[in-house]
Amino acid sequence: MASGPAPARPSGYLGAGVLAAAAALTLLLALAVGGGAASLLIDDPGPVVRFGLPAARLLVDLSVALALGALVLVAFALPPGPVLGRTLDLAAAAAGVWTVAAAVTGLLTFLSVTAVPLSFDEQFSAQLGFFLTSIPAGRSWLVTTLIAASVTVLCFAVRSRGPLLLVLLLALGGLLPLAEQGHSAAAGDHDLAVGALALHLVFAAVWLGGLLCLILLRPRLERASVAAIAGRYSSIALVCFIAVAASGYVSAEIRVGSLDRLATPYGALVLVKVSALVALGVAGALHRRFALRRLSAGEDRSFWRLVLGELVFLGIASGAAAGLARTASPVSDDVPLADSSPSAILTGEPLPAPIGFGTLLAGGRLDLAWLLLCAFGVAFYLAGVLRLRGRGESWPAQRTAAWIPGMVLLAAVTNGGIALYARHLFSATALGMTILLVAIPLFLVCARPLELLSRAAAPRPDGSRGMREWVGLALDSPTGRRLRTPGWAALTVGIVLALWVYGPALRWSVSEQLGRELTPAIELTAGCLLVSAALSRRFAAWARAAAVGAVALAFAGVGILLTAGDSLLLADWFGAMGWGTSAIADQRRGGLVLLLAALLLAVLAAAAGLRRATPRQPRANAGTRRSLRERVRLAGKA
Image 1 (cartoon, rainbow, N blue to C red):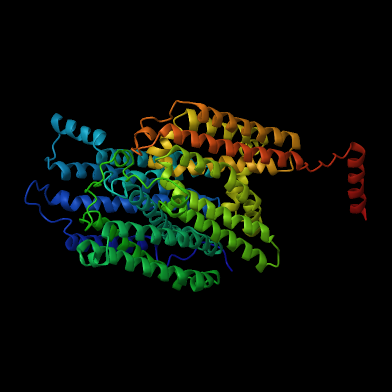
Image 2 (image 1 turned 90 degrees about the horizontal axis):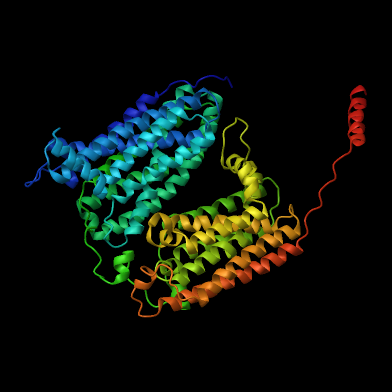
């Protein structure tokens, strides 16, 4: 097959035009159906604001999608070379448009909310400054604009893929303020609604932006690499499709409420998005089953026609989403909870039933991000095992038997009764931390997922980086090697424990949504580092036993202090929930849970001490090395 740039049929600009046209037409129809741009009888901001605000929001969605899609392709699909630099230029340009569009949207939002005429006097500037710094909606757009501007500068300044991974995370963070605007903080199901919308925005943006970026870059891609890059994007798109479908369903369930409300304008626009999503799912299945095979054989006309069809439906979904943002939901999120208990004031949730073994098993609080993570974890692990079996290689069944219960337990801790009570009771918080730090890591480490990844995932010969390459780089980095030693792993767990009990992490983990999402990840990572170091044969048995034993003593010390002490942690939170029972008694139960964690760690320390280290191979002396060189020389002469 001849190498060289792929023929520009169709051009990338045609794909971008198709997407923009479909999105704009759908937006106009959505505004007409939903009444998002209807003239208001009182305090009408004018047609410029009424039509300009949804148009600017649509431009924000498209530009952030292109920036994210380009960064994702740089991180996970593209090989080094001129195309990678071109992609970063595209990401920087898209982030620049994102910056301007976010700033304009913030201004138009201010004009829409206040109906103040646009002017350049000092009073208008003072009102706009107050809106951007003191009102939640204004702060969200200000933060989004600043993040977009930072991403623009960093895409121009940074060209190494390691730091660019951090730029990608920063760009993803720019979508979180937009998710916060989608639901009132005083309404019920606020955390679930914001979390589902954040997932929806992130995965939809990566899906749309990756496809658009692939179309724009196509004329510059070598024919031999087009199929490989498109295949990598197809795998990313499959994950995005599942996440967008799940998060979209949860968001629709919260905002529509019942099937009969699908007849409302909001429900009709939801049906348009669902129809577009179904069509995209069919197109994705055709991609993976037929089109990629033809593209690999050099027959790319049908593949790119299918891609243009995908862009049409993605444009329809984007326009409908922008229209939904200006359409009144049949379930108003401005109605606060009827419950006025202290728990509802502090957490936004009613006080659950008194805790017990039955309520811990039967209760639950949906956390969609962690539920999807566990589902993907099981699916990818089983896919890796099946890939090995397809090659005729074996994988121990006991490792699979360890991974699945570990994922199920992780889903139960983050979505079950422990998650429900963790915001209200210290003992439930301590129980969740114990399971995340000790119990779940034992299952996951014994399943050897990193070894499965290294064996099942194909290496990238073109220099691009997939999960296999990124994980390998992280493990082989100086920081990764250091954190996997027993001493540093024990220190990491000790720092997590100290920050959780005596630092700000406890309040952050119960009062802030971002803290509730990240705390399990931090605790699970620290626990996996400790268990992995304790079971590793690369280190001396005494070193592993001493490190885990020190952590056990730390847990025992904190548990004793909490069990015997009379000082209540977060008295203004745990002591103000209105249970009618003593909060200090519950904290003492939490201390007993930490003592149980110390006992489990002591057992792990004993097991680490009994697990002998693998003897190191002695280094060859100089004579042996000379003998080997002599053998090579003699073999060459022969």
